[in-house]
Image (cartoon, rainbow, N blue to C red; front, side, top):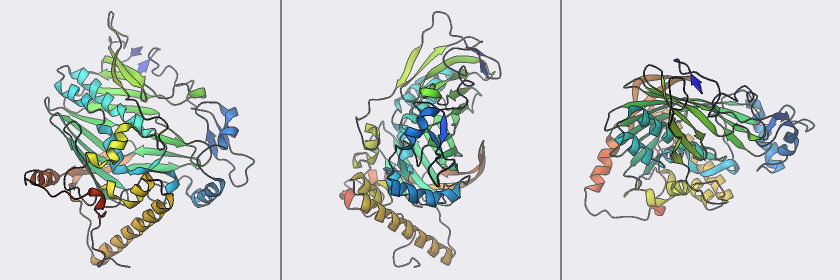
Amino acid sequence: MAANKDGNQSGSGGGFFSSIFSNIGSAMSKSVNGLLGYEGLEVVNPEGNNEDAGAEAQRGRWKQEDRDNYWKMMQKYIGADITSLVTLPVIICEPMTNLQKMAELMEYSYLLELADECEDPHMRLVYSATWFISVYYALQRTWKPFNPILGETYEFVNHAGITFIAEQVCHHPPIGAAHAENEHFKYDITSKVKSKFLGNSVEVYPLGRSRLTLKKSGVVLDLVPPPTKVHNLIFGRTWIDSPGEMILTNLTTGDKVLLYFQPCGWFGAGRYEVDGYVYNSEEEPKILMTGKWNESISYQPCDMEGEPLPDSTLKEVWKAAEAPKNDKFQYTYFAHKINSFDTAPKKLLSSDSRLRPDRYALEKGDMSKASSEKSRLEERQRADRRTREAKGDEFKPKWFNLSNEICPTPWGDLEVYEYNGKYHEHRTAIDSSGHVEEADPKTIEFNPWQYDDSEVSA
């Protein structure tokens, strides 16, 4: 595989760019014609071609009545950013919030220990980039997480010495912020998305900012992930693809990783494939990376043309852990840990996602209660907003501060929230207080609210 000095790849090998043009149309789709009211909607079968779209349209999780009602509600939003425009039914949700989903990146944190201890600056990027790739195994789940309530939090401990805190810092538009740290790294993210609803699919653009600091070397890494497309929202089996570039830049040295996530082609060709290079600050390729984001990633030293060095071998750096069989929500074992109180700290905040009654009801299989509790929480959030507006107050997050920094992304600018350090002080005070009376966390009432019930406006 050849690579020029600008970091652009050409030639063949490793699957990188070699099939882009043959797959540029992605998996073939077909309009849902002949069904009154659904003309023009596209159905994509990732394992077939355009002849399979008709049969694929009859599959999926929706009952016909639910599907019809959903389409009547959604068709007016075609072409719009629906990130905060619509309330979605519980039938498409998983028992987890977006704040918890942010913590799934912590599963393979051993890669950051390897990166932090590594003296080779280019291998350091291999480990770090692979860590960011690893979360895509979890992101392929086709269930939507619950949108967090403003002020909702999620705490996570008891894994690799990591302390993780996330908070919903803005509701319109929805923005979450998180900070994770152990002896090897610090990770900070402001998470915001922009979407485009296309009828039977939605494109999702990550406007967030992700920063990773490796403590031993002090290097700071910045991530720009690829966009994501969710196919077959109404007709067919829902599936997710993330075609495009992932760029990880060492802001300290100028080294970078450029990876290409292949689009899914006919009969699944190219699906899940990731290929690319680690470049030095002179934009010369040093290490090639290749693999599938749902299976494993490997690396190999390369020459100035991007070809593997003689006598070098392709080595695996990461392999996805085995997942439970036939899990209803396609959860990994780590995802179950995220929902568990085993990973909750002492004196869990009452605003924690685990305590949401709608989430817990869905986890227990009570769809009716999950739906009613979701509606109740959303209405309570509206009451909180009305009270805030009536009082002339502003919402201020507890654990993050809005900075003056505006971060440009390929899909728009982002206001950055910074971790303020107060959560560390909060946990240190609890941990140093000696014996702590531990209440059963399941008895704690979910309370992210800015105002008491007696204060809120009807």
